Image (cartoon, rainbow, N blue to C red; front, top):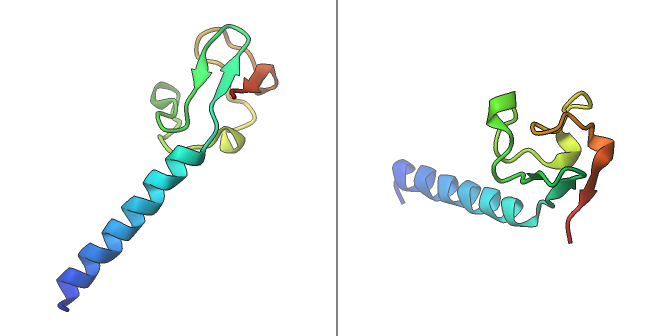
Length: 76
């Protein structure tokens, strides 16, 4: 196996791991109905896709109504 092949395989493994992580991250719904989806993040407010709700900054608020994280509930 060449070095390039090994690098490609390593990248594919990382991509697969990332995609699996996205599937298992929970969505949270605000009292206003907005749903935070970690797969999308909140790019307009500097939150990268792949950021779990638990890893959002404490000062992050709902982009629709301004509610704090305490006003969100985990979606089933």
